Every structure is written in C-alpha cells, then in structure tokens.
Length: 245
Ligand SMILES: Nc1ncnc2c1ncn2[C@@H]1O[C@H](COP(=O)(O)OP(=O)(O)OP(=O)(O)O)[C@@H](O)[C@H]1O
Image (cartoon, rainbow, N blue to C red; front, side):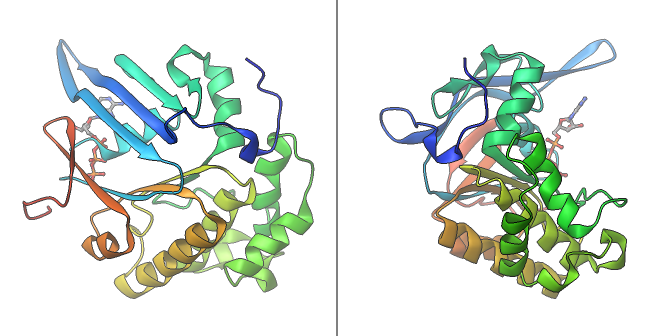
C-alpha cells in the first residue's frame, strides 16, 4: 500500500459510498484473569459527508470504538475499513501514517502541546504528514475559529473554549475526510461547550466533512444527520431510550 502523503480528497470510498465500515467488531480487554468484552460483533457504516452523533452510557465503549476507527487500537476480531483501507491489515506505523493523513481527532482534554505556539500546534501535524510548514493554512483555519490574533500565544494562556477551538482548527487543517471527536465539550462549561459545538458544526458543514462525535450532549442530536447508540456492545440506530448517566 502506498502511504506517501497525498491530498486527502484523493482517498476513495468503497463502491457504495460508505466511508467507514465496521464489520463484525469485537473488542475485549484482559482484566487480570478475566476477559471483558466491550464491543460484540458490532456492524455499522457511515457515509461520506455524514454528521453522526454517538451516544451511550458511561462505560458503553464510545472511546474504545473511536480508538478503533482511528487505528489507535485494534479490534480483537472484525474489520475496520476506512475508504478502501482495512486498518486491521496495517502495521502500527502504517496506521499512524494513515491517521495523520486522513483522520482529525478532537479530544476532551484538547491535547495541545504547551511548549509550542497556537500556530505551531497546527503546523506540526501538517509537517508530520509531509505537507511542509504551511503557515498560510494554519492562519486560514485559525481565522475560521476566530483565533487568528492568538496565533503566537501559548496554549496555556488561552481559555478552555479557546484551546478547544485551536484543537478544532488543528483537526481541520490537514483536510481529513473523517473527524472523530471524543466528548469535545466534556471539559467545558455549558455555554462555552455550546459555542465550541456551534463552531465545529458550522465548519464541518462548510468543509463538507464526515464527523463522528461521542457525546452525552443530547442537544447535538438536532444538529446531526444520524444518532447511533452503543448498548450491550452493539450499535443501534436512534436516540437512547434510557436516561444518560
Ligand atoms: N485499555 C483498557 N484496558 C482495560 N479496560 C479498558 C481499556 N479501555 C477501556 N476499557 C474498559 O472498556 C469499557 C468501555 O470504556 P470506554 O472508555 O470506551 O467507555 P465510554 O463509553 O467512552 O465511557 P465514558 O462515557 O465514561 O467516557 C470500560 O469498562 C473500560 O474500563
């Protein structure tokens, strides 16, 4: 497989337009002598351009699933196919390269590098993906999240909401086809979380991105094309009928 950097838009989707295919995913963790199965023969497909919200009780396996889709972790069995690439056939290094090029990940805890400026936090992943030190691109996405004037600041000087907006800019900068967000507003107060989600929703729509967001925030369901709920190790279409923890 050729993993050399290429425009993300060149990645083809499977013949029926599916961008993400989860085919019989089972994920178990060893806990001492016991094996704990979190995901069990899970099947799902996400189409290119879809905005999907992932819900489920605490401990249902949302982070586990996002880690499998991003190739950070591997399933115990089953296939994770992104476009025409089966991540389960790649080495760890190949999965890292694939992730840099095609997937933007937004974490609950922002995960910015405190010793780099805001702009450098955005250009570093671009450099790692072989796209050079693209300051113009960094300034463009920073402008879109309303933080162009903070480009030379260090992340610790920014508020939580501002730091998460930088993380959104970083996720979008490499022009990935797929964005994964793991409770992106979990560390923010309600109002700031709403502002960050407004920016994220607008950018995802404007840039035509496919996004899967794990969240407990039911207000996001109205923004989404589809809601998937993790329950009993499997994905169900629709809104959870239980009260979230
Ligand atoms: N590396 C690991 N080793 C062992 N168990 C793990 C590991 N990662 C996750 N788990 C277990 O898998 C289950 C699902 O965890 P996960 O973090 O995916 O849930 P979640 O739905 O994201 O929860 P929350 O909404 O609280 O963030 C939990 O019981 C957790 O303890």
